[in-house]
Image 1 (cartoon, rainbow, N blue to C red):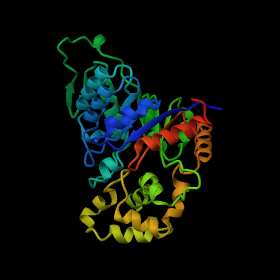
Image 2 (image 1 turned 120 degrees about the vertical axis):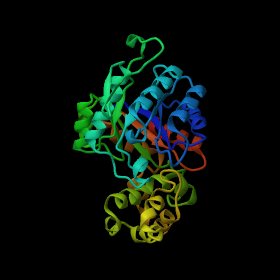
Image 3 (image 1 turned 90 degrees about the horizontal axis):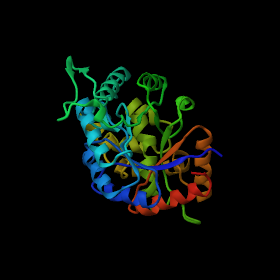
Image 4 (image 1 turned 90 degrees about the vertical axis):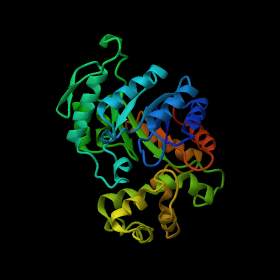
Length: 337
């Protein structure tokens, strides 16, 4: 059976460093933090605090949204984290679903992504690069490019052919996907897949309150993502979709994106709970990794056979240690690591 690395991810929050420390204690390979500034602290600051509390676990932003920072800023922040956690840093880039949509903006064009990542890589290599019609490079006190650490592994959130082409163009080390492995997975030796859900206790009701809080934030993407891309019509045939839309569209149109993304991947909103109660709960086991330990372990094994090399689990709910422990145990019982 194909081996797979077990990693985790968190929506960046004040307690993220503590949760990453728990993940290290439990044997997780890497911890990713989301770059969504409107929902929590700066991702680089949280990663630096996590570096101070850990010694082994890999650390990285997953995914950086290029429009939020000048490439020089992300380059210097990368160097700072590498100094604090040498050999443990990886960086992922994406076009910005929640990182931009929650601010009323569209995802970034892939052409821009390619130019940005190329400039970022060049800066970290000590090269002079052009950005915004200006030439720039790192200016350390000792101007010796040979003294710079190696450029960390770079992943690109490539879910379609344009993203896959960008990943190839910038020489990405792998891809960072969400939900299911994309077609481009076969092209890469490193495929990180973000999943959420919860491992059920024996005879536990999969629609009960604990499960709702632990797996609900991931399940809610079923409504957040289609609505953002296609509006209310995209949810016409989704169980609970009409109830979700009815609550969201109480917010005036200019600010409706705030109602869609409030609590995204962190907690359920009134709209999410309305969808759950209106039949959406039936979608939980089909849209998240939720089930018995044997079910979750078998699902991860199946993803490994489809080319996933790193499963990235996002725990939710009030008991993060419980979620991380149960998921680890379910995977280890089935999949070699």
